[in-house]
Length: 195
Image (cartoon, one colour):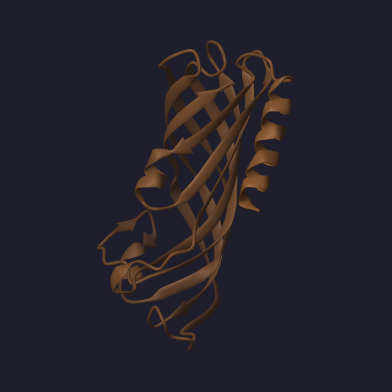
């Protein structure tokens, strides 16, 4: 059954690639997310000579050792303007993001721009978020089809969450609290295959 599904998927990819123009579509994986055990995939499509639309998504559904929880999913579309040719050199972007999370028991002492992340050390938070931001990045061409891209983004996120006293507890400490976050909203080191 799995072989049949892979054969169908490959057929669609090969048939679809006949309609793709050079330097018009890219698939990517964020190495930073890969290092954290987060499954991620991005696709970027050329819209105009200097404009692209990048859409990336990630998922982490695993509980770490010692009860640490970093479960989440996120979708992040971004419109990009390229200063040279698309998929090469400097670019700026404006992105939106949204998703859900279930995180806790992450030992740290981080407090940043009004967000006290040290509370993740002894509590679990479950909720959702939406927001937007701006980004700057650079893409290095390695070969005809391979690029490496670095990007950093700053922005805003609104989140609404419930808090629990421990990773496995079901009793709520806080119900439906909201928080406004301002700070980094994107960090990427992407390995890219350009069609």
